[in-house]
Amino acid sequence: MTTLQNRYDFVLFFDVANGNPNGDPDAGNLPRMDPETNQGLVSDVAIKRKIRNYVAAAHNGEPGHNIYMTDRAVLNEQHAKAYAATGIKQEAKKLPRKDEEAAALTGWMCNNFFDIRTFGAVMTTDVNCGQVRGPVQISFARSEEPILPLEISITRSSVTNERDRDKERTMGRKHIVPYGLYRAHGFINAKLADKTGFSESDLETLWTALRDMLDLDRSAARGEMAARRLIAFRHDSALGNAQAHKLFDRVTVRRRSEGDLIPVGDARTHNLPPARAFADYEITLDGENLPEGIEIVEPF
Image 1: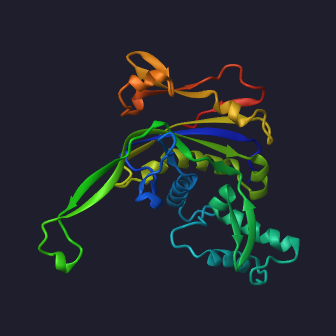
Image 2: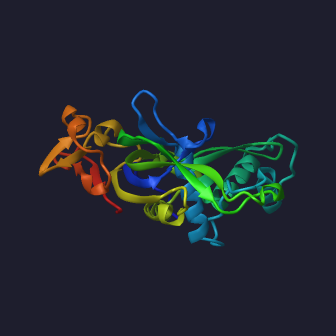
């Protein structure tokens, strides 16, 4: 299968209503925040986890779509599969001395595991399969405006221990963001895709996962989350035809206010009521006078 020949840079928008998009275990599972701006954060790891879960569910059992980083996976056992399949003798903590054997091991892992082919992996454990730098990288997502996390008290009619049988109810807490529109940036390196085997078909799988992963990830803690828009800039070369940050600057967000559109961050937004729906925003894409060799693609 032909590997990807074009560089891509993309912008993903998703939102949350009455849910916790990414709790911080070091802060009592409060929604992640930038303490200086109060903007909400969702880690790149959380986004990749959702992609992995979607691909695992949508392509279960299909060749080349196994997932390396799964719940309770034992990585040495994953690596041992490569040695068994290639017939290469394993030496503790070391790659084979022959370059072709080392390449065969990492190649087998890339061919069989979608997330290694996509995101890369460090596989230098006791059963050593080398390192792979993935072509797809995703940034932290950041909310367009500050968020105000709420701590909600909840009650439970059941108890955990026999000694608490006579208690009427127990109390608990959950944290939510009333509403937040989040923006993440992504980068796809065609030169690295050539090394891992990331293909045009894999790209379509990635676009579909970004669109549908939040529908698969429903939970009481997540509230209502939805992927809203994906804007990709396709370069007509592997190295690229423009700097990513200049392309991202073409994608802007504005608040709606009685027929007016006010750029996010403008002082006038301080007088507006808090956003509570996607309809409170407008995403604008400047597609005029694009750099030569750049094409805009909107998978959704």
